[in-house]
Image: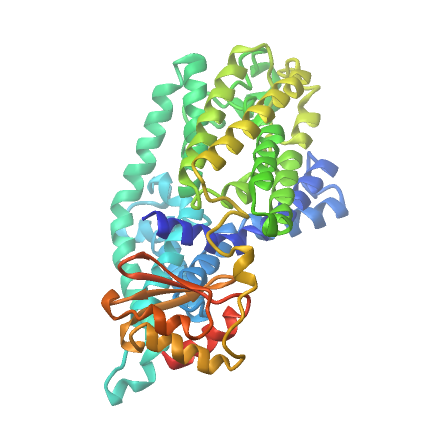
Length: 485
């Protein structure tokens, strides 16, 4: 399971890399025109629309990234299959379709179905369905009469059938899960600062499945009358007189220290613990994600970069967030946001009637940054956790491997023979320096034969997994081997 999650985390790296700049553009557009979000300023409109093009369609980016990344050979056919699955789920479970299926008026359809389209979890699920169907059926051979649909052309057809079954399951399960979260939020809303902390913890914990919005509807909006965000900003039918100084904003304040200071501190810890040969790559992703979080409060680029690589560390992140939210609820400090808990909203909210000692966010945040940095750094090193720049890829020595010759076809042939032939290979993938294979019978592996190709070594993490350390020319060997398979 851990290996599967780490592969999923690696697959998300590509779409996640698109998000930081989008978040920054959206935040800057909001800063220029906080009241109209672009309706009152052309530059703001341009930035907001450009940023939202990616942020609002994050689920689609995840569909393609996960589907292609989780496929055996990173083929685009898997990405197409993932999109087929996503389009079917979001259409079959849209409020209009559910209204048609149940015969109920559209306004009576469970609100849970309004949260299907654009949901990151649905995007990831669709990508996994597409990649699984591709891996299983990409080599399917059909009778001559149906031969046009053989192989990769059969993948979308199978994906459609699987997606229909999954949609039927979600039709019954999704409203129960969503309703349960709303009920949970309602229950903890009366427990003071402890409830604020519990909310903060689950707000972060539910981000991977996109259901944090269910909790937000309880605390920020008007699901049960708390309307913390509405009252703070005088929105949603409320005016500023509805805000109670010292109370309104308690469900938002704690996110500011985490988003502005905690996440940059955690990102710095990840950078410092990255492998020396990967620091530049890690710096690009982590630095952009940290800036995005600090400036705009958009945290997904950072969180999705490690939540599946290291689930334990993500739970720690959620716990710290909960503690910070609870502490801020006890302190005489209140801040609120309409976009998210970043620097821009912190500046904009300071003069509102419900705001209280917003300057305290800075000293609190500095403490939070230190806690994040040292706790993350300690856990990453002590537990050897996988974070950006620490993936199981290459060592410096692997980069200096000298193959027996530069005839990559010959090298691939020798390695394949040592693996027991193509009949013994279930799947093939590669990282920067290694071939990663799943095999059927480990007794057929001939390590001496494999090493005769000049590779640096052979690793066998399990009875069905083999890693052949080839060096930086691994892509050429992998390409040749894929042809042979």
